[in-house]
Length: 505
Image 1 (tube, rainbow, N blue to C red):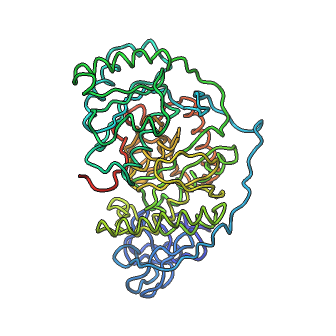
Image 2: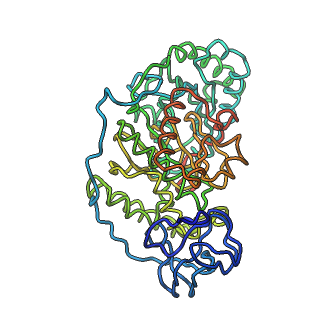
Image 3: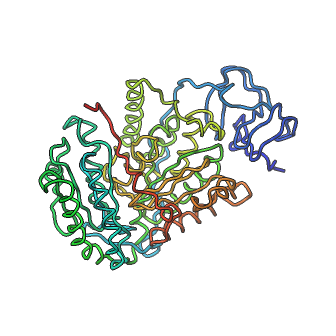
């Protein structure tokens, strides 16, 4: 009979995970616990000698820093991490994914945009080219939302200001500039915005006219720009900005929801505040939902490169070809250099909260995080905020810091998001709705106002596949307009955080 107090994830594992706390002296997995094992934490089920690998998910998550006896707690005090070779075996497991014919695909109710993309929300966005125009952008959005005029346009979800802390004091070329430019273009043309106004100061490094020229953006009913200096200062810019948005509202309100195939869903995959259950419940369940979305012709975007570090070999084997796999490895090498240059290391992750929840090394966290991507073929690897064009399962290079990673995915075109959490992350992501998945029933009950789906019942016997189907149905419902808990709470305005790379000058 399986022991309900522990989970063993693969036959080769030499540790098990405690479903609930195991008191010292209690019996679990046929062993006597030599010390208290906290819930979500690991207990050794076989001798692990000094220097030998610790295995979970059938993979190496670290190495014993001293002899570990069966029944002992396995965590930072007796596990270390050092580099070891991984066999990338490029494209070995690539396959032709099963994709249903159009007439059999699921549908949702979305907004068809002029460029052919489909939106799941209909916001009016006020973007900023530079931090110097951030307050003015906020004043404009607040004035529109306060005015009461939106009551005449029920199809519009509201005005939202996307403000950030950069745009000047930076080089006018190079990685940092390119990242900001892609991010701003991605939001300005996002299908979840019915209209957008971009506000600048006028003298900043990130010039609006340059972005318009380089991306071929033309002003009209859906997109306009202005600068504070040319308009005549703060008060005049706020007044002019409000009038411009009022003129765009009737155009944005013409959009009506209509039936669209699930192939138009672009799902961002995020996790934050992870714990020892993340790789057992919510992440693999989300992976099952991703497999369903791919089957229905849709797209899923895995991200957070530091949080697949050590598990990248599982993704390179699923790459559609060697070039895609090598691009992923190239991004890993970039991160190794990036952290080294900045005096950091890749294993500064997991965070203190992750460790308290039972995660010991970045390898363990990454193996769980990669499970969000399901089992289908990896079709493409994108740089931060690049437009996502391939259908199916893809990867985007982003930091592991949730607001920054999510901003890149949304800029790439994600129109809905699933966010797993075991410790309890508070997050929303306008203009893209974020569905929160709790890894355990305790955090689901404790933070019920923030959590949309409880994946903790997987520990009680609900199958991964059944929970994946529930997540897939919820994604389509939210894409059709059902509100998430984070939307009800008002999250999303302040979580726009473009990745800032390079020197601040």
